[in-house]
Length: 341
Image (cartoon, rainbow, N blue to C red; front, side, top):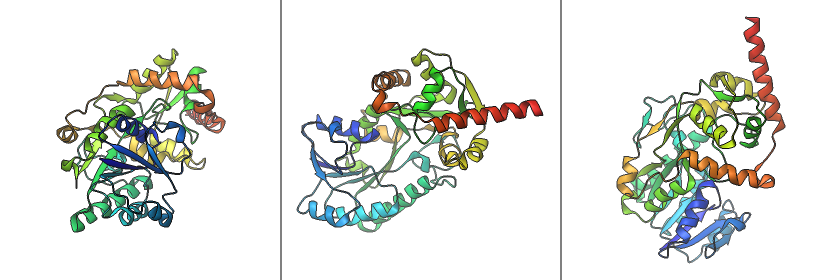
């Protein structure tokens, strides 16, 4: 069988490509700009092109067909419309990576199934994913375009640590604050429920859907089964670092307002996603992929990640002094307000 990954070198897709590259039944191709070729496993073939240059990609794909095409970098309906033009008649299955943030916000119930309504008034990213899904499912209903929708939640790998509140530079500055004994901002009171999934576990579910006839015309979320509060997530990270956690609780609504003028979209990432308690019902996926299971608990996965991150400072430790100063301003302003009341 022959698979094409559009992207293929990101947090989620890297684990899938590695897993598939070890399976002799699959011939694996990547279509990307070749910027991260060092993470591509031996034996994986590469088409170096910019997917946004539709004419060049169409020429590069002349005469090629695939059993499965996997789209990891389609963030807008125009991307899936382009893919439909490129791969209609060229593939037996098109898997689109959507997002679990597309599920109804505010949540009507904390247990999420694939039948939960898609609606997110707080985050344009999620609305674009919803619109992309709607286009693809319409093409499936009207023309039989063989789409499968996959909705990841918070997936991480050895190069990243899951957090709720961080700057545009990523997670490292929060880790730095923990190491320095500084207070770390946690949205709400830290008791909302969240699910984090290590990318190798995600890969089990994803590869099980590839070439799976039961997946055509269907949507699946792929997450682990472990549910944690944000307090537990932060405490586990601090334990792995060997430091004491100093949490500082701030409402998501306040963070959204306080962060807006500094370019932090906490309305989308928190109110539209991480501030809401979610527990995923994975029974539909497990019926289609009986091998799906959680093999890496968060306490294990975060130690894998921190071992790698601390050993690779140039690659992973991106300082974000602007966010660090913003945290101090927020905490200082709230502490002053407490005294002034």
